[in-house]
Amino acid sequence: MADLGSFLLARDRMAERQALNDIALRAQEKNEKASSWQGIGGTMGGLLLPILLGATGPVGIGLAAAAGTLGGGLLGRGAAGGPARGTAVKGGKFYQPQRENMYDELSDFRSDMNEGLILNSIKSGVAYGMTPEFFGEAKDWLGSDNKFKNMFDLFNRGQNVPPAQNPFGNPVNNRGYIS
Image 1 (cartoon, rainbow, N blue to C red):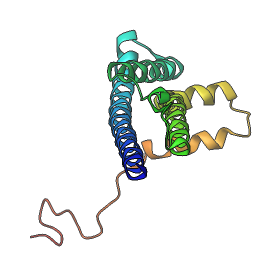
Image 2: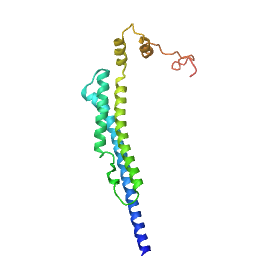
Image 3: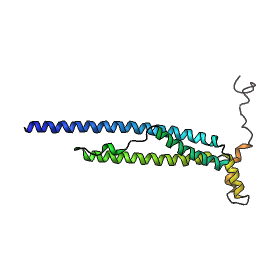
């Protein structure tokens, strides 16, 4: 009977290990899908919301882009079904340390997705808000007597500079190195 008991115990352990592996694979697929759709939704929301709202000015465009990235990312992640939850991992007779580890990893992934979405929305808002008008408004706001005035002149230097002359002549009218 000891052999039958060992066989049944081994069979139960193997079945539970297979079930745990299946849960891990489904969770990985669900997380990849949610992450991809969160990125797509965030990109589309960040591009479309400033256009749909007709946002003007650097602050308005930046705020609309940040809100669009956040909202679009949440909508995209929700459309994909969201990231996997760790509730399916709980329970079972065997592999408790592995189950706890998997539960913690799934929880960490969910919080990392949330942090990443918030950071991406802030970055897109700042990036969209950093238009040439922003530097002009900031320069006007700081005033001409401010010590940071020269910092904003760095961004305007390339606008009125004549194009560089080709030292070998103009290749279009055959005066140079290309005949």
